[in-house]
Length: 312
Ligand code: HMG
Ligand code: MG
Image 1 (cartoon, protein in one colour):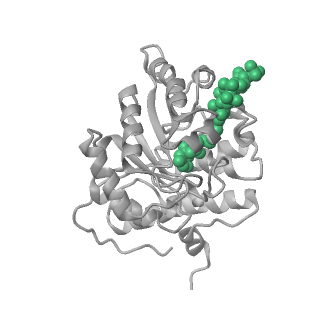
Image 2 (tube, helix red, strand yellow):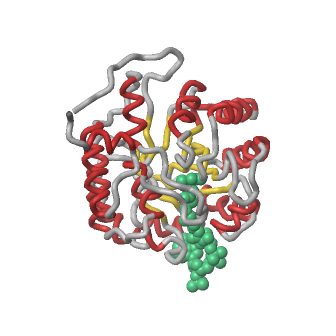
């Protein structure tokens, strides 16, 4: 198999934690309903490829995201997976469902803009944060003891509102942090960010007291900028990067969103830079090729396509 030559570059971390979102962000946007046993095999294969954090599913209203309506069926099928398995919950109903099935990590998902808060959660920005407050408190209470990630969508632009002021993104991030979220994932839901914008947002977040070690980046690759944006975030000091195996994904409530940064494209770059991830790119690519067959369409990841073609 072709592999990149390892040539480190200055000013980068030595290790990156990949937060794999394929089974959740990826599959939530596929037209095909993937059966729970196939999802379970996908998650097992991702763990065997070396991914240590795999976002498994969502406990949202089944009518809002029918692709993930089988969360109750899926969870017992993955309880032997040796990885962190966070799940999305929007409200106390979702949290109770997740905790009942043994979830140890949850994520709430806020929006930097009013339009997306309404489209995705049927709430205002404030209303959504009010909905999350008891969720975060209950998840972190001693008997539940779950780690909490706070997603923030539309950090760099919004399909209805256009450009999103950095101050707006920083203010909602700060509120998620103050609420008790352990980590904030900055979502470029529609993929419009560019590297200078990433740097500026991270600088401003740092000035507002949100340090890089509490931040993750979540880039969708709509305009082909996800990898460049990731490098900008790594240079800044962020070491947690969200990505989706094979570049699956999008968001059902933001039609202009395409897939996430492909995990294979990310691992190719990090391998070349000598940055440890623990991921075996060959096994991961084989998993994405296998999943693409189930979905009936080829993976959009350049790396998956290149590595799965016959070597010349
Ligand atoms: P709502 O209609 O306002 O709900 O939706 P409600 O609170 O009025 O309740 C209505 C009914 O839903 C009630 O049932 C509830 O019990 C039930 P009824 O009493 O009428 O029989 N219900 C639930 N059932 C099961 N599980 C639940 C649940 N909650 C309420 N958790 C709601 C509000 C938040 C529920 C809805 O808007 C929703 O489910 N939204 C989820 C949307 C979603 O999952 N979007 C994709 C994830 S976000 C994303 O992809 C972005 C990200 O990747 C980052 C990025 O890229 O930017 C994270
Ligand atoms: Mg997303």
